[in-house]
Amino acid sequence: MLKRIDLRRDYLRHKEEYLAAIQAVCEETAFSGGKFADQFDLEFARYCQVPYAAGVNNGTTALHCAMMALGIGAGDEVIVPANTYIATAWGVTYTGAVPVFVDCTEDTWEIDPDKIEEKITDRTRAIIGVHLYGQPFEFNRVKDIADRHGLYVVEDCAQAHGATYEGRLAGSLGELGCFSFYPGKNLYAFGEGGSVTCHNKAYYDKITTIKNQGCQVRYYHDIIGYNYRLEGIQGAVLSVGLKYLPEWTARRREIGRRYLSEINNPLLTMQAHPENTDPVFHLFVITTKDPDDFIAYMEAKGMECNKHYPVPCHLQKAYEGLGYQAGDCPNAEYLAAHCVTLPLFPEMTDEETRMVIQACNAYSYTIQGKQR
Ligand SMILES: *Cc1c(COP(=O)(O)O)cnc(C)c1O
Image (cartoon, rainbow, N blue to C red):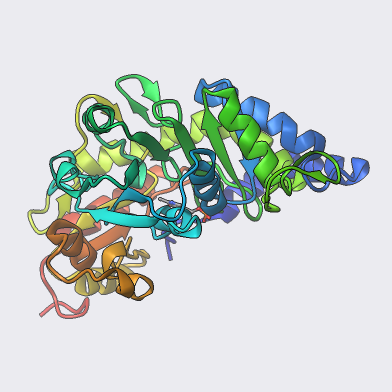
């Protein structure tokens, strides 16, 4: 069975290096924050071409920190795409502010700049754009709208390590960039991890204080803080991964580009990738009339697929209280009802890539994977 993603292959390939990195942390007992986490912050900032990166314990807290760094709180609204992983909205909700969901476009499946302005009120403070599936959102248009209304733009880069928009890296475009290193993300920890990137030292100082119990001098707590520190072992593992990230990204792009050019079944629709972007194919999502049928068909052929994401944010039960209804974000709802994610990860072989392409092209509508 070809898995949708198989992390074990990377672990086995670089096992010695990973275990040596973990051992080095143990030798120095630098377990929480500390030398290895700090070293990774420097390397990751350099990678993203920004002066600052603050490592945190996951991508969700990265988003929470970004909102807090901007002073967003109760009474505020933040624009968030309806088509994203739910954690984009959690960061807003944790501060007491309200996420306001905006539909995605029909073809890129990213936040639709044409639908942002109608959602802006005098409470709106920021727009979080998500580079979903590794495809940069239309940053310049979002930024223009934000500038006209005096709003911040925050990037959710959890799926977009190394992606570029007009030659500029994800995480270097907006006021703050929020990354996740959850296992399976393009750069991943052996557990949980995240980072917030920025150009502004004041944000960096605020985030490093917040994530460290609100203190800069030990046991003197100047603001209400959190324990959001990155673990030393994760920092060390991430430094190993970061060395290979350019190679992984090149391979993801190679496979992604092959899917785009070689899958030509009219029953399957692919995401649009505008010319001014270079996506990193975190997830290769397609839409099809009957996703469960397609998933069963692929499974019968030995290939695992899944769905990102079956319910759009505005219709999640947790946000019932916000009063959204089916029909409010039709493109995001269509996507949720029709999406399938194909296997794609850097260690996939050419033969496996060919197998996926061939199966996709041979697909005709079946009943739960069984040919009629
Ligand atoms: C993974 C992800 C997050 C959350 O990151 P965690 O590290 O899992 O907390 C946020 N936003 C998006 C778009 C993600 O894919």
